[in-house]
Image 1: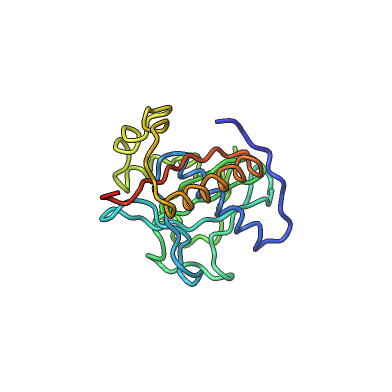
Image 2: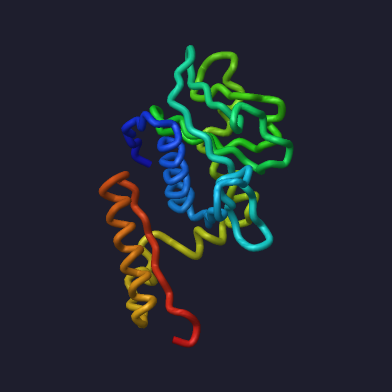
Length: 197
C-alpha cells in the first residue's frame, strides 16, 4: 500500500479524532467490519467484527519522536486503563504512516510504548501492521476476502433501489469522493435495498 504523507494536526483532540477516522478507513480497506459506539464515555473507540465475534479497539496516535522511535501514550486522562477496558490498541505513528495492532494484555502496567524503533525499547515490532490479529479475533479472515474480491462483477451490477436507498447511496458516494480528495483513501461501499424490494 502506498505511503501517505500526513499533514500533522496541531490540536491534540482534533488530531485524535482524525486518527480515529484513519483507523476506520484502514480497517474497512482490509475488509474488517467496524462500528463506533454512541458517545465517547466508553473505554474503547470502536468495535470490530460481526455478531458473536466482536473485539473492542482503543485508537491512539503519536507524533512524539524520542531517540530512535516514537512514544505513544496508552493512558486515559493521565491514568492507566483498567484491565479489560478494551481488547486491542491500534496505535498510529502519524509521521511514518504505520499502524500497530497490539493486544491489550501486552500493555499491562504500561503508561506508554515506543514504536517504529530499532532501539532496545522496541518491544512491539511484531505488531506493526498486524491487522491479521483483528481478522483472526473476529473470524472474518477468509470470509470477507472471498465475499468481496477486488473488481468483482457484483460491484458493476445495477441494483434496483427506491428513493430512500438511493439517498443513502448518494451519501456514501459523497463520502467516497471526500475521502479520496482529502485523505487519498479509496472507499468501496454499495448499498443494497432491503429484502423484498
